[in-house]
Length: 237
Image (cartoon, rainbow, N blue to C red; front, side):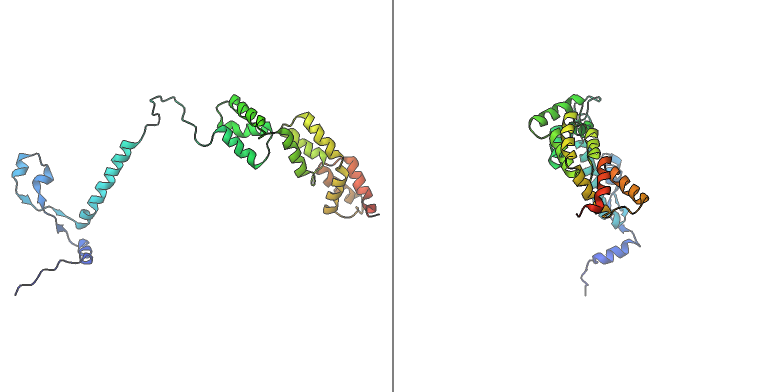
């Protein structure tokens, strides 16, 4: 009685693959080259190949084909053939980048120019962009000065704020306007800062010097500091 053949399972093949070599017959003619008359006349001879190699050979061939396709589709660094040509600028335009900055906070003309300089081809390009933004109302030194004074007035004195305006490149005429408005409220602002930091009159000369140094460091004027510390014990009358 004949026994019907059952092919081995995949698990069995994987186990045997580590211990034995399986036969993958192919003609020696194909192995050595199909253009040879001597090879074509030779009989088929088994060539021993591991089954793991048989399984992975197709994957390697497909990977090699993909590599050739990638090389064929790659573009040279200079498509126009000029090795000295500048690469095209990527990302937003210079004006678009400037609008992005100004949409988040105010900038003076000088500060905005410094931020745009690394992305521009020349200073003239930066100046043209800022001129256009000023005409369209995106950029304003006056608005920057008012915004900075508003943000810092509750914590800093006039001298400190004026110093920041000068460092940012605000014109002297605009600084003078801000300075005048700040000086009008200097005493009230200094008194509020002193109350939050100390809240009581200095007990001796050392305490007086400490409070005075603190207010001076915040940028308040010396005459205002003397008024605040000297009047602090009578401010509730």
